Image 1 (tube, rainbow, N blue to C red):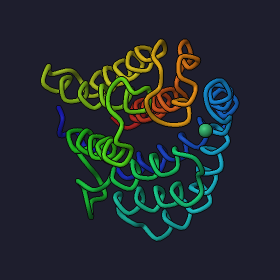
Image 2 (image 1 turned 180 degrees about the vertical axis):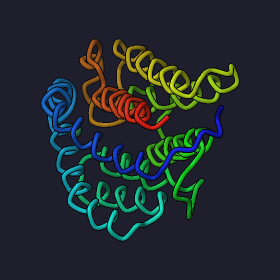
Image 3 (image 1 turned 135 degrees about the vertical axis):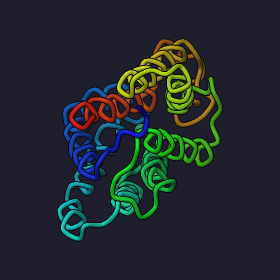
Image 4 (image 1 turned 120 degrees about the vertical axis):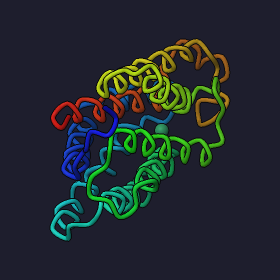
Length: 217
Ligand SMILES: [Mg+2]
């Protein structure tokens, strides 16, 4: 069940769908960041994904492998996105392909390894821990849910849904906490009651990974 093959076309579509989602959710994410940050999260991601979309046709024409496609896209995010989210999402995409270098299709089990690799890169780059009220609070539970879901023997799409649900629960679990990292840290108790924009975008990203997969498995 977990050896179902996912073609490179999934990752091309994934980048396109992520770019569309970011445009759609730009104002929402910026609104969240206005509450406890500097109002730029949605705008930053939009700038980054517009750059990713600009580079995508060439990467498709060059027929690069999945890891290269994702790495180059991550480099676009890293170079174009300001704030903390550029380096963090940049790292995530740059490391997504690390477990599948040279491949043009991957199994579902490999996709889970890829997502784990990307999330682990965010954790090591950001040095945030669970409960710090950062994107790690959404991403770490999602990572663990993927592997728990496979252990349970859930179908691939149900494994992904379990990860999205875990991310959303993680996002909600830190709403009533103070932030221990990032700009919101300076607000102290005034951050309580607000959704962290990084946890919100992380949930939206995972939702797109999941919904895009429905067209391919
Ligand atoms: Mg910001």
